[in-house]
Image (cartoon, rainbow, N blue to C red; front, top):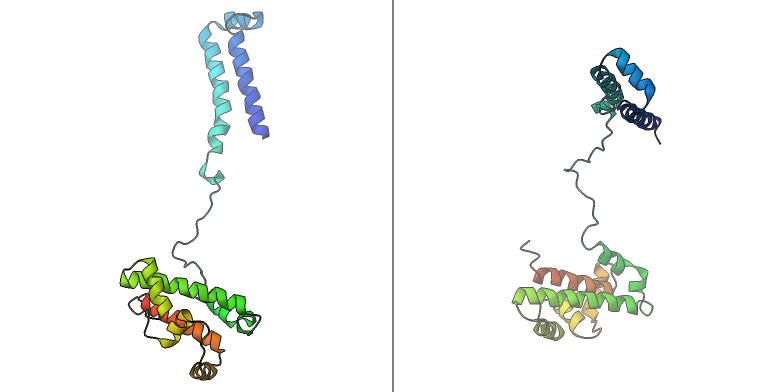
Length: 193
């Protein structure tokens, strides 16, 4: 506990005790009051003690004693990862590119792309989820044949796909996933935004 608070607490209790004693219950105070000549002097003395006790409390509330936290500048932009970073890292990862070992990772990416395509078709064509799934399954959701076949049929990679991927230094699976992501973005109104 702070020493000053303890001191002021004790001083307050002493003032309370002196006020209680001044009511005539103890003989030294009554003798003092009779000699001084009235209750007004005792009240003035107690008020002076109370004022002395209050001065340090008032002084401690000065502005120099305040410790405030400074807020950060609201105009500083918040750093967030760029959109698509997780997709890029997943598609560029060795576990996605490896033909046999990456099957589960490729299936997860394909599922996420299919879900995104269904939601984009629902927004663009203003249709229900079952109708949008049907359009994605049939490949009627986009004009991009690679994207439509990637989500519509099981791994139907052609020689043209492999050559296009090779030109971009990508695996056919990575190429098809990226083309599908671009097609979903285009269907979802990416060119308008």
